Image (cartoon, rainbow, N blue to C red; front, side, top):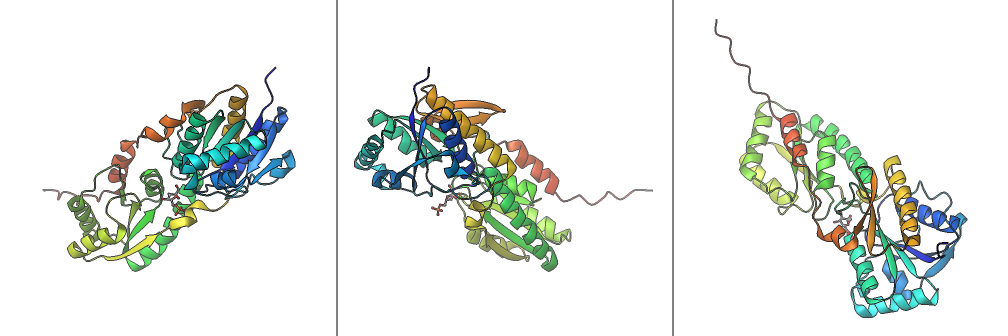
Length: 334
Ligand code: F6P
């Protein structure tokens, strides 16, 4: 018979829609199999302070539909230190917790990996970040909701852009990766998508925008990833020098992190939460539960943050084709 575990769960780093669904799945799966479950508040900050509470199946009732995280979250600088991690470990021991499930992104996984290296602990990660920048899973929990939220904003901006014949540069989140920009750009029919994975060619961009303007287009949208080396205002200034289009900048910001999770995120989070507990019970350690080609996959935590998740360049090429201005029809020689 599998040994019953004392499992702690926490959310860490930037919140992401679907984290609650993951917490619910961890707690309910864990209790179903006879384990004892603890919620740790405010990520590693709460772990260091001992803000730890035993949970029952009703502690997570009706949270599957909610954005944010009922456990709250934090970016802990103290947990970056060995002293901080030692305090955290002592608190885990105080509650008898032998396994930790961390829902978060790269920084959160680094913290968990360090903890496991330094102390006799078992740990499994669940990818929870809107950025979709973790290797070992096709999608992270929160990405789909963030894309849909940004898309909704882009659709609205398109209305006002068309009414005023304007060019909008819309900056989306993603830290150093361009996944959110790529998906929202394609979904929103953006004329240009600028992501850090592809060096920007300003002359090409200006030529494209100029062609769009001269063809009489009513509006144009550039979706810009926040991690692109040139910022929105810098790009605006460069374009303004070359073409006459009325240009506005819109930074979508934290709106992308909030809101009720989509069905996709709820289902992904539930599955990964369920699998994370089974993995803990099977004595898996130092790994992230992910979904690759519809198959649950366990990737070493270190690979999840250190390996680069590829951008499918065909999508960028496709977008250029879809946004390209039509050549003037050839005159028919009679
Ligand atoms: O990692 C999620 C994310 O929203 C990034 O896209 C963004 O760069 C960062 O977090 C913002 O962090 P904070 O909310 O701490 O400003």
